Length: 453
Image (cartoon, rainbow, N blue to C red):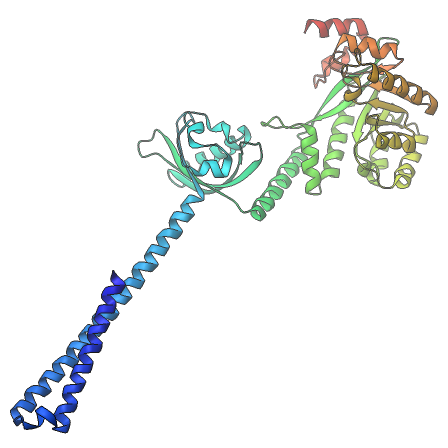
């Protein structure tokens, strides 16, 4: 409509200019009807022509003003559309003092896979891990103390319905009635999320290394023929509110180039704690092939308080070893001094057998996948018997991992497996007083305790 009004003003201007031009020409030439008119009439006609020209100018100005207003309103409408589109990419939400959702915009479906009705009345832990929530609450407390009732620009990790992490930029303020909080969350671009994730992992690992926060748990390893504990596997334990295990910590550290540093820190913690173990037990330490190639390892083991002939290095089987010659060369001097090598998590596949053949370990630790249900699976029993014979041929001992039932224990013992560990025999523990009692434990007493629990 505005455009038609502006067009009407322009048409009026054109008509007025044409009429005024015609009258002016008639007066100037003194021809036709205008020629017989008196001088006074000439003056009148001139004024009339001038009025038409003035009217045309005013109409033109009004048309241009209308056109300018139309453009301004069009820009405003475009800005509004952009604002709405921008807001559509943000998740608007509100929670009460108990942390339960009282409102959620439709963006929760696109960003997190949760339709709003599925969130209402539910705790916010549905979409954010406990550790992340604790960090957010600390940020909120700091902001309330120092910058007023709200905070913005805080980055946190939410959890999609499918379990995937979603990095969010969050802005929060207290509700007007102080009954909870409301805010907006916007997904970060992938590049920014990757950079922040790398920074966060680096900071967490470096803080763990700096503060020496790694603990060591030991799990007993039994000689199944004598019923006595002969060794203990060292298992790293990390401080975490999220329940993420050691494997997650090491995997994350590897992504930022700190995997080796974290392994050496866990190794240091384990060797220090091993000083409290009974002296007749060997200690199994988990190391990656990459860390075994580190020139610091021989010096580290030489300076350890634990004699090297009590140390077994467990090499994780599922880690790829591209070149065996450097690894064998690095381990050979240590093995000559009494160090033993174990292949951890060994399975029945070709890659696993190649790993064992090339490394010629002293100990083969069979993965839980080969032990679970072996008491009633003839195929697994055949595989177990084959592994026992294979170990004899290369001069290695078998340790069955993950024994969880008395039936599994009976089955592997009948197959000739001479060592084992698992929850049925003894759980990992960080309590040193329990380690000290191990020499007095027999297989019968430990399994009775496991049955009772």
